[in-house]
Image: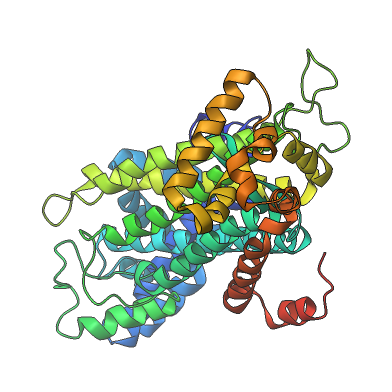
Length: 467
């Protein structure tokens, strides 16, 4: 199997995707779902009296992957210049009687191609959701573990205020919560089959086309569409849009972890299994390569999204010009997303956070991250704008004198009119500012638990057995 240089490379593919997802989009699985779709056509046609039941029984028994000569299929498809034309010809020798003549009976090529693609996408959806649940579980546990762990909220690369690591991670969990729910909601619309013919009118099926299409879809475990959709590609575009948003959330988490991994920050370290190396030049370094991959894959997936919007520009009732974009973009997006999710799970599961370094970094602040709280405290006595102007002036004075801003908080005569040194000590104690962060983390955990955790997990959580 070759799917792009990186996805098909024996040496590089695991750096961009997972084997579970690549198998779904393999040639072998494509032929399997094509067989399933063709068998489902025969089933629906036989059930509604359009072909002999004996023909369906033969097709069901013999039209299976193990009976397909892939080499011959490649040759015949290339000779015909049409995959399904080659497929139908290759399978004819499987049948001793006339049953082979009923293969593809009543279906157009796009019925089979699109429905088979949906079957693959549904399989990939199950894998993605498994990875999302794993990521959600580890984030949930980390939110609980670090719910009260104090760190700095960072705005424009500077300390803005005290917060907690649990809340920082919780914001990611909460957004994934929304997107997981959204992904679930798309299933009935996205995972629908189609048996409508080349023009969408189901003319080959006759007046009872609804029953035939319903039986076809039901046999495959797919929803029956409310309308012909070969030219309505928004079902795939919307699905991939949610995938892209998931990738961006994980990419943002990666950017934050990269910042925390910087030597000068030192609050996070990627896990290194025995034997893993970070550099051939600096033997002892532990570079955050997996975190970098998470950030990179967010960009790669986002860049594929443009092709998905292009797929909606179908010309007439049948147009492979833009359908070709679908067959490139969406499989690659799901594979890249599987790789990104797998990285994120392992980074969080086996990496380390350093609460001690977080406290040390907090201590390096010169009082700036408490200036907002100080302004609001002073505002009660002297007005917000007056307090704001005072603190801006003190900032400039501290810079001119090259002294810590905090020192001027204690020595300024205006501040001392309203606040004692004990008041300032209390105000500039980090733990006094994180109550809401802790409360909001609890809300995030409760919401996620209601929507995504199993009953056993909820019971486990209520007993306090999670880390």
